[in-house]
Length: 289
Image (tube, rainbow, N blue to C red; front, side):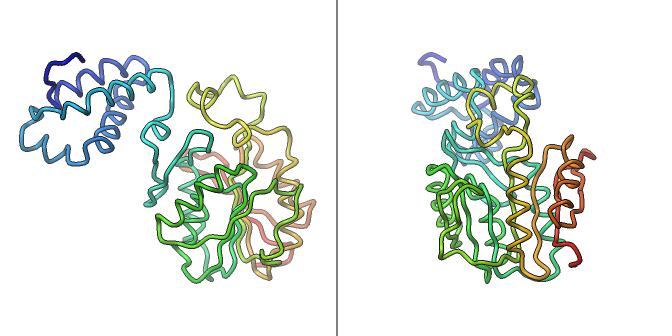
């Protein structure tokens, strides 16, 4: 960009010309706005007052160039600006921690709307940045919320995000199904939620560069249904009367996982996302409603 003054309108054109060939016009525009919101929160007022002719602060330009360079190498913007949103929650995000997806937002909110009775105990398996745990802790302020993940950085981030969002969650670093939950965790759960790694390794080459190059593969890819089996076994043993478990699934595997869960004594219900794909499963113990 050089040392010459640059207006907001010029910055937009530079950004779109750099990113549109790679991301498309619409996504490039969205990235431009997210960068401005991060680096210059008052940008909308400045733009309206000056019709885009307001000059960028000089110290912004080098940061902007760095961000564009990282975006051109497919790095997710959440890692670049260090945060993302989940429903109405702002979450800190660090490289090495899974970035929550809009698909998960949709089913989390749908599940919340379906729950007729407020859960007293909630467990989030594979919490990552803490998105699901914090979402349900905010919606059910009287519940005790617990979260586990095998990634120590994820647990640290989840704890920080909980504090930032004014909720309390209890956490533990462990590999679910291979290590027992801590003694201070409840024995019975009214609600268990999870967005586990569910994309089969065979689909690795089909995922975008932003995922393959930057996000932790152990939070995304899996071999078989072993984790879903562990979750089903645990849910059957630990769900309270009337308790529910909800998990996100790889759409092509949804019906197979539902059938598997029936074998483990659960009564699953499949749910579709906004694109009409099987995206999540809610289950209770057989014979319970």
